[in-house]
Length: 359
Image: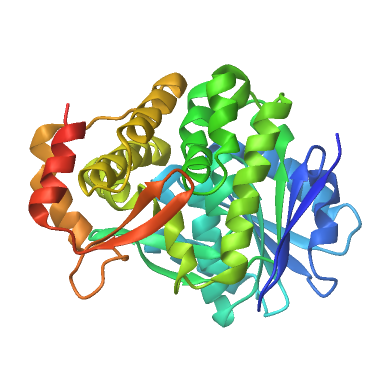
């Protein structure tokens, strides 16, 4: 199957490569001046990280170190970043050296932050190994770590040199992990490319099977959306905010669950919530809200959260990085494919929408 290149333009351009068998050419994605590389990965990818190291050292031009970090959100802590900085410092990494993020979205977030902050910025090549990483976390240049107060409150915008989405790495992922990551793909369908929703409704099983043309089409559409938005608004000063559809409540749920939930599960509920909020505000039709629920049900993604969680979730949302001067902001829909910002909605409206998803 052919290799697809999707380009991010603007002040810091880079390419996102989608296909199979791409890891064999990873050396070509590093600058010729690079002499040392740090591969950041989780324990589950230890063997594959070693294989990647073997590819990189094959021509004898690189020194490659490996930093194994905790899995999922446990790895997105400042203490983990400090561990990586220590490895780089002891190996005398310079500004012409590089970091590779090899893993899911949490790994690429952390690796990007490590690269952005070491010597105020060294090269990063992102190699996402999950659906979530490929369509969202690794492809937009956002990096960061979590704190006790919330998710992604500390970080930097730091464009990768290249993003390599090798679909081969998805073949061994459990189906539930693919489905959870696919929530971000569905988000792209709701806010930008309704074709994704059509594919899911036509054949939900094929849409989450990495071996199918339907899956690849959905992945490439989601990446294309992200690339277009990031090209226009790298630092989230305007258009990029639409990518937060479902994320305000979703991130609050992740925080409430101490990051033990998969991101996709939390933002599925978050998208269901803002769909209901859009409907109650007179923006979105009953039919489009029902379509949200139908698609999440087809994929086996959650759409409800416990009723007694509201006050805690509201408090977390008020600290969300998207809030402005203490006022909550939500990305809502005027219709499928037409996102917009709702600023400082009345708290009674917010609670009414929450009651619609409370289970």
